[in-house]
Length: 160
Image 1 (cartoon, rainbow, N blue to C red):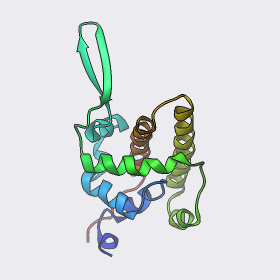
Image 2: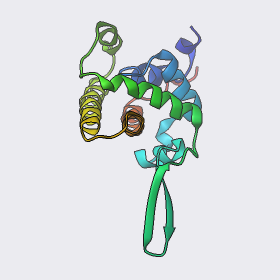
Image 3: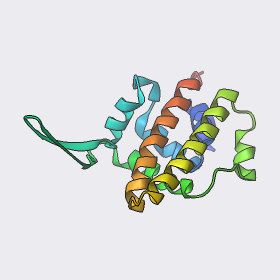
């Protein structure tokens, strides 16, 4: 009930268009990130979330490692938990269809494009022999980019 009166309510509603993002997940993401438009591009958001590979460099030798985990742990965890939904083929459930009604067309298109890409990417990574946790982390990273794109399309409500 409190979310409805929040200035970020339109953003929370729009984020729920993406598969794997429930009301709680959207609220956590918005509460931890704030206005996502402060990031000029998705890469800045990924760095803030700690979803970028670590690097050990000496001279010309570059070694990449696991994710840095240097960013916001709550928002990162929400993305990783939501990414598990992309293990299954792309589809829109009745519940998700009801959430999509009333949202701008661009948001719905971004959400569907994201679902197609992320479901496909997960399958390809698993078929290539990647460990499930690594594949899910990669999906979570891209999921953040789709949330960034949705956040660019929806403005927070003005406070009265």
